[in-house]
Image 1 (cartoon, rainbow, N blue to C red):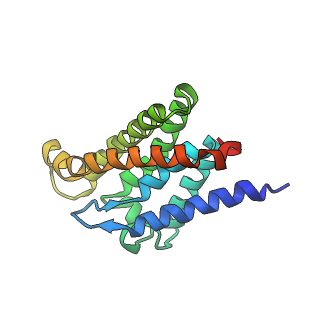
Image 2 (tube, helix red, strand yellow):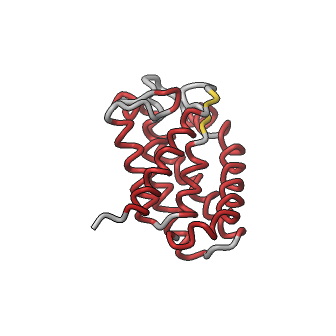
Length: 177
């Protein structure tokens, strides 16, 4: 039997991811978006299955060509382009975040730690992909200066904001944690 409540939660978070991807600051080959803020919220407010499902659906929709990624882009070319590793890194983020959630608990300090580590989990795949897809021979220093350093502070702020929002919202999602 279809559980419409769970299906609706997945759909809600997919929509939030898309809204986050349209909130863009284009600063180079990797733009600043709010998608990861909502991915962090999905980790904290949904169970592992739902947050992983929402993230996978978002990526699949984008890969199929729907304009769900930053700047209204979609298609396999985005997945294969400079930001593809970060997009795939969202799945790693969700897996890491949900593993930590099982261990660390549901207080604000734990939520901040979970989302901060989950945010950082996006970077290895994103940076590796960026370095190898850009078509130039970049040093790791240049890759870090373009694909990591400009985003760290903002990602940590999004992680803290997600933790605060999740703590405030968790009574409404307690059956889905």
